[in-house]
Image 1 (cartoon, rainbow, N blue to C red):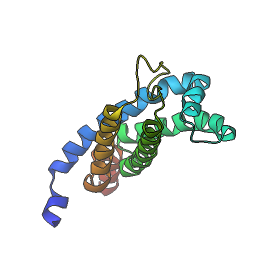
Image 2: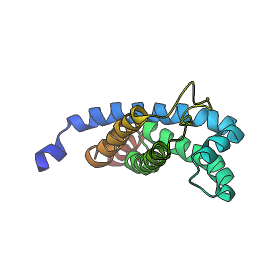
Image 3: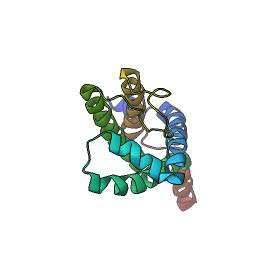
Length: 159
């Protein structure tokens, strides 16, 4: 088991997973930051949060996505960024599953506010999000010496 955890290949696979997840989250947050009003409508459509919390979530969540994306991209506290993504993906998956169980005809609101006709939620959306969750968990559990800013800083300290 220790050999699996210590395998040097995790650094490179983890780097690819981190860059991919970072790009997903950076692209996802862009529209939400620029149009929090449209994102608030998407959040409210899930009918999970009390209306009093919808605007707070619509304003803060995209910035959390931005922070996690940057952390993953540059390798600064990458495992903390992966933990943030893991938590967000669990919440997003729960919201998707609840919306599907309720039979809501809506867009997921993941990347830009689109209508249900252009980007409907489905079990394929759940599978996609499960894939992103798996990548985040991989980085969190197996990328123990991530390539990036943290490893560069650690190397400079040893010099």
